[in-house]
Length: 243
Ligand SMILES: Nc1ncnc2c1ncn2[C@@H]1O[C@H](COP(=O)(O)OP(=O)(O)O)[C@@H](O)[C@H]1O
Ligand SMILES: [Mg+2]
Image 1: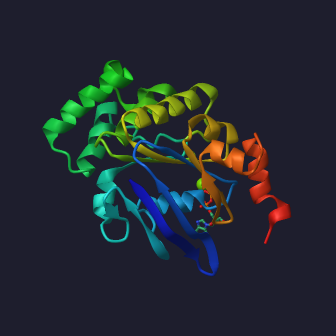
Image 2: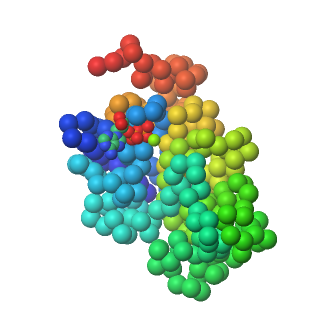
Image 3: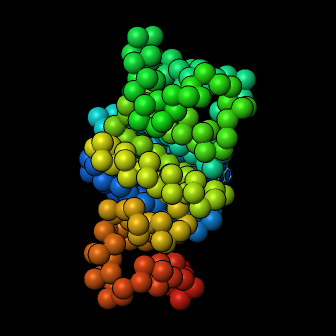
């Protein structure tokens, strides 16, 4: 469903993402685990076609990020950062439908889709309220609905829980698991071991732009003969293994 092939990004002389290779199958959740500055956001920005790779590429569904970025954008849904990024002056429904229009959906399917999403997220009562009048939790649901309004096959989440409180974190986790249930392929980044253990089918440990290892959590635990993802992580990125 998604293949990353020798993906590299340089900013001047500095290599932020260094020759990444990994594959994610349909319906899998892949977690990119790394410290601050590891290259997670840069990687996800390239997969989302917001940033051009210096070299290498990725195939998202059927489409190559370098050759068919517009097609890639139709295939993916994005939820980046902790902020909802809604337009305060638009209503919940208008926020969602604006995004749907950007994705070339026609009016009829936009309306049907918003009705469906409003039901499934329980947003019917505030669909026509301005975003500025909504609670944090309501805004969060609108942001989820907006991210999947065009029913993308692949979802990209960049540190989706950073800066959120416990309840909001749970909502994000439920949303990610729900995307998987619907058969979507999910790539998300995190620096939280427990989050990655809870959600991921596969994890890639990234450090200084390089993918140190990748596999299911069980595979990694067996390979490193260690039951703690945190210890495995430290062993892979720690000072003893520098250079
Ligand atoms: N636009 C940019 N120009 C120069 N350096 C950048 C730019 N964006 C990111 N970097 C650098 O690339 C590295 C990886 O950043 P980033 O992908 O944001 O890491 P992460 O999301 O894992 O914290 C960092 O050292 C960061 O300072
Ligand atoms: Mg980041």
